[in-house]
Image 1 (spheres, rainbow, N blue to C red):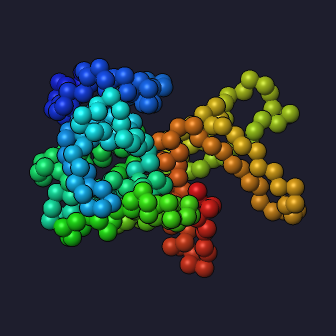
Image 2 (cartoon, rainbow, N blue to C red):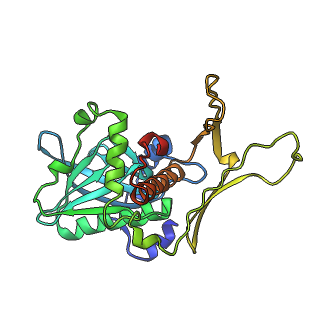
Image 3 (cartoon, rainbow, N blue to C red):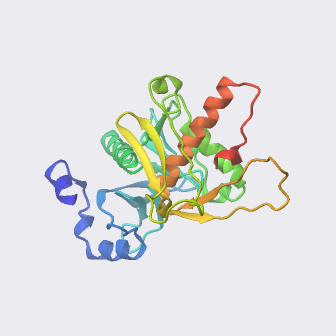
Length: 285
């Protein structure tokens, strides 16, 4: 994969793929299963902290995560963000500022050296996010010269409830140019097939059960129960005839993100078609 990247336009401007300290750091904190992380972009720019102070930072993007690194400490990262946790990018049309929105955690506000660097960073994020999740990363373009109002700092995030964080994620991913737009789904079908666990009447050794979601004619997201860590949900006080609860935890963050976005899309479709029905966020998250 790295050779393919090098044969085209190589965006590893700081040559971090060959840096022994970075290799050691990725081995320690990276996601190396089933394959090691591959550096797609490395560059130096400014990070703007919660007090508005500009700090020199190295931004490194791999096929699985975003790394914030101090220029003089390449062997350690200040923060690692899973690509699947990114909800959107907010970019100013009047300056070089942009914010990487991570609503389930907190955001990062950056300032690039020029428009070319900014475009390369955003396009790299979009390409890698799409490859990882099969979805489009939303890019919000704003007329303000700063993205400060669209950035939730680490301190602010601590004051936000988990439910509000999920609501913010839905808002960031459900804008006009995101995949939720109805017209993009007129010819597409979303199927969610849930199969029960094997019963005593089923033969042992049968084919593994699969949950499939068809995103488009050419795209299909499938996973086996072997990809899932099941969590039993038993409510002994449940009244007769009430619905069953099925809770599962996906070990793959990117796969989980894809499914959650689709659940959000389904929620929006139901509420738009049947105005008297409200689907609580907890039903999707």
